[in-house]
Length: 262
Length: 130
Image (cartoon, rainbow over all chains, first blue to last red; front, top):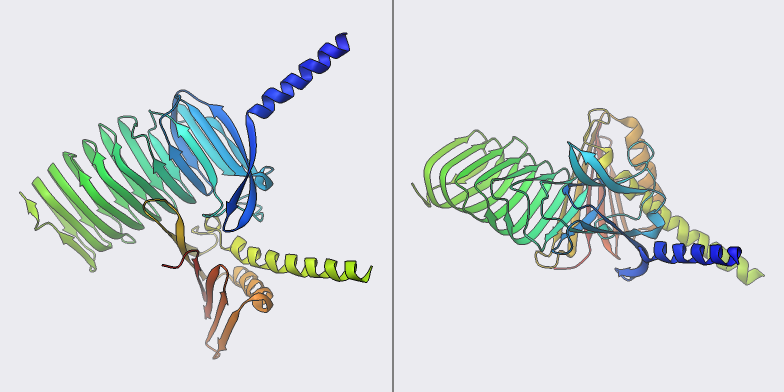
């Protein structure tokens, strides 16, 4: 009888464990790839750091719910979890042996790790490979930092961080964002940045480094607009600004402020 | 038995071509570069449908300076690919060595140029024709 009860308990434990893991086939470009989905939770998540190709969706659900789907073949190499980062909780996703012992990988911009997160207090989202960021739930901490190390695409109607919104781009970043809702915008561009939209920020600071290439067009209504550019491309600001300071040292950067009412 | 051996040989050939292409892509990973030790600059851009996020095209460029070991790896990887490409163009005028390799499905255009101690590899992968 004891053995039967023990066997039943072990079977139940296996069933519960498997309930947290789902395996499914995804068809990508006609090829079927087996993905495994695992779930975890962290109620006070404040950061997301990705060191691999990811497709991230921020949605509104149970606070702290996290879902990660990755190719089953990558299972021996994938590392992810919630870690302490700068005194807060961060979801970190990486891959073993990436730097010192490169291994062949399925992961690419077409075969990413899919991440779904329901968290309303994110302060930092940082991608170091190819990051697709889909924002379905526009709820963040009062101060938000978006950081791109290689390739990042942001798709959403709006991003709201009441106090400040900082963008640090060191690669190729395309922001399909219609509204940037915040009191202060700070952008540092050392790569290629596409940023069109509108912001009600009262203070806007834009710095384009020598390697920066800009395709920026912002509708503004601000007190202070500071622009420093050593890079290339086009920076266009329209709307209203009480105080405008522009410093352009790059030969190939065009800065338009003529459509501003000062 | 003969049919099994022939079938096995076809499978091995197919797998080896697939592995060779992955070998070039494995060398083109962004996390390996942009550091002083490797003397490289790597840039990549991914064009996506702004509504669905679907990947349309990927372009990348790797510039390598004064790194003979890495140049040799890429030369070997490209040579290994030669048999499997749809189009292969090679030019060597003594000062500049140029290779263009094109695959049809999905459409990949990989260009490789060595001029002195500088190697430039540029790639385009087109997933969806616009």
